[in-house]
Image (cartoon, rainbow, N blue to C red; front, side, top):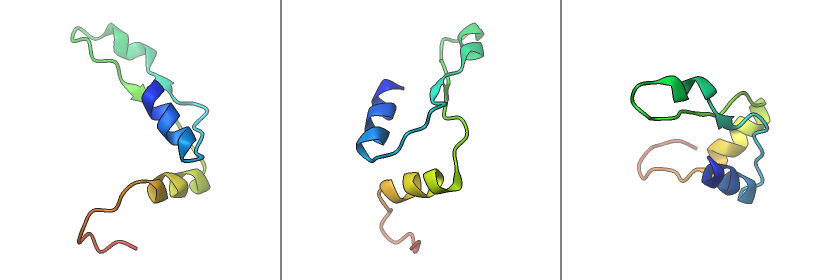
Length: 60
């Protein structure tokens, strides 16, 4: 989660609700879940724009 937060911040993106889902610690198999939370449409667009595009995806 810390690495994700830092990478997003380097891209100028802040997700205030980014955190570890507390209930995921109660699972028998230790695999905490990262809760990305909710964000504005503008933030979602900025995240999408910061991700590399796959070759031949046809998206613009």
